[in-house]
Amino acid sequence: MSDKKHNQLEDDYNQLLEQVGNGKSSFIDFYRTHGAIRNFLESNPLPPGVKNIKLAVIGSHTLEPLTVCLDIATRLKGISPEIFQGGFNLYAQEILDPASELYKFNPDFTIISLDTETCFGEGFFHIPENNAVRKLKTADTVREELCRLTDHYLSHAPSTTLIIGNFPIPVHSPYGMVRGAGKDDPKSLVGETNRRLESYFINNPRVFVADVDGWMGDFGKRSAVDPRLKYMAGIPFSHDFCPFLSRKYAVYLGAVAGLTRKVLVLDLDNTLWGGIVGEEGLEGIELGNTPAGRAFVDFQRAILDLHKRGVILAVNSKNNSADAIKVFREHPDMVLREDAFSAMKINWEDKVTNLREIADELNLGLDSFVFIDDNPVEREYVSSLLPEVAVPDFPEDPLLLPRFINDITLFEQPVTTSEDRERSRLYRQRDQAERLRTQCDSLEYYLGGLVMKARIKETDSFSLPRVAQLFQKTNQFNLTTRRHSLAELEEYTKSPDWRLWDLELVDRFGNNGIVAAALVKFDKKNRATIIDSFLMSCRVIGRFVEDYFLSFILDVCRKAGKGKLVGLYAPTEKNIPVKEFYPRLNFKHCGEKNGVLIYELNLEGGSFSPPKWITKIDNEKDKDNK
Image (tube, rainbow, N blue to C red; front, top):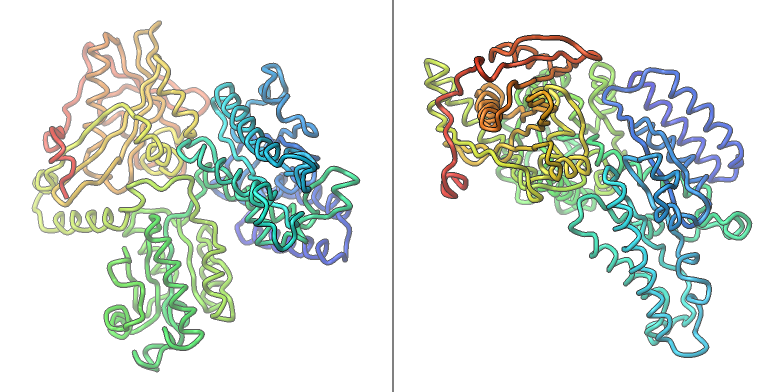
C-alpha cells in the first residue's frame, strides 16, 4: 500500500470519527467499520518500515474501546500490532501471578490504563466526615502500590517497555470555589500523585508516564467522559475520546519502536515568513510586528526547539538566494539563522530534485524527511514523486502555524542524547571532513589527516540510550538490522554469554560521539563468537572505523580462546553497501539460514590488518577534543 493510499485511509477514518463525535453515526457503526479498516490494512502491502510489535493493554476499567482504537491507531502509525487485552480491573492480579496470560504473551510494550475513581475509591472525592489525614494516606498508598506493582512487573517481564497513563484529575472539587482551603482537596492530591509518579520513574528508560490528564484537558474534559458509559459499562472515557487517546499512545509506541523522522525541510516565502521577499523586500515581509508576523516568529521558535532536540533542519526554496540569505542575516525578528541549517537549497530547481540532493548530502534516506511548504501544488508534487517523504498539510491561516508545528509528532523520540543535541554540530564536522577530502590527493592521506581516535567499551547505563537509538534507526551500515529494544539490550548487558560494545570517535574537527555498536554472543560449546548485530552511523561511513571495531572484537575472541568468529549478514534494500564487509576482511561464506548469510573467520589462521590511521583514545583530553 502506497503512502498516498495510506493517507487517504487515514482521512476516511478521521471522517468516520467526526461523524461519531457529532452523533451522526453510533459507535456500533465504528466497531463495524473498524473490522473493515483492519481487514483492508491486513490485506494490502504495508508502508515501508512497518514494525511488528506485541502490545499488552491492562488496567482498572473496561478496556475494549481503547484496544479497538489502538489497533487502528498503531496500524496508521506504521505498526502492525498483536494485542493482549487484560481483564476488567485485573491488572494487579495479572502482574502478580507469574502464570498469568500476560506473562505468557511476553509483550514488547505494555500500557497500564487507570481511571482515578476506581483506584482512589469513591469516598476520596468528597469532603471527609472525620479526619482528612486518611485521604492523604490514600493518595500515598495508591502511588506506592502502583510503583511496587510496576517494579515487580519490570523485573519479571524484562523485554517489555511500560507506558503508564497518569490519573485524570477530577474537574469538580467538593470544596467549590474555596477548594484550596482543604489540604485534602482531591484535585490537588491527584495532581501531586501524578507529579510524584513521574518523579519516581524519571530516570528509568523502560517506563514512560503518559500525560492522560493533559490529553483530556487538550481534548476537553467534559467531552472526554461520558457518564452513561461510566455507570453502565465501567468505561471512563467517551467513545469519541478513545481514538484521540489511542493516537497519543501510538506516538509513544512509534517513538520507542524507532519510527522517528530526523530531518525537517522548510520552504521560505509564506512558510517561514509572510510574503515573497523577492517582491516585497526585507522590510516588506511579515515577521514580527503584525499578528501574522508574531505567529511566524512563534512558528520559528517552535522549529528552533525541535532543532535543539536534535532535528536536522534544511531549506528547499524556489527563490533568489541573495534575497533569502539577507533575511537570515539581517532581519531583526528572524529566529532561525543560517547556522541552524545543515543544508540549503535556494534556487529555481524543482523541489523533488532538491530533496534528493539534500538526502545525498546528509547521507540519509528520504523516509527520514518531513517537508513543509505553504504551496499545495508543491506538496502534491513531492508526495506523488517521493511518497516516502512525510508532507503534512499546511494551515491556510498563518495564525495557526505555532499549533500546527507543535501538533507534528513525527520527530518524537523516547530520549534525547548528547548526540541528538549536538547533531547540527556533528554534521558541520562531517562537512569539514568532506572539504578536507576534496583537498587531498589520496584516500590514505585524507584519512590520516583526520587524526581519528576511538574508544571502545562495554555499553553502560549512560551510553545505553544512544546505543538503543542506533539499533532502531541505523539502516545502511547495519549487517542484520535486528531492532533490539532498549529493554532487550539492557538484558544482554547482564548476561555472561553476551557482550554489547560501543565505539566513540574523535577526529581533528571534534568529538563525533558514539557512532557504532556491536552485540556478540559467546558460544562456549563450539568455541565461537557470533556477531548478532554490527552497526555504524552513516556519518562516518568510508573511514574504515568498522575495520578498527572488528579488529577489537577479534582480539577479544583470541584472548578468550575462541576458535572462530562468525559474522551474519541479512540483506535488505538499504544495507546493500555492507554486503561485502565480511568477505573483504577474509571471512569465508559457509552457508545461509532463513535468508541470513553466514561467514566465518578461523582465529587460528585468518586475520586482517586494522586501519593504521585510527588510534586509541588514551585520556579525557583526547575524548573531549572539540
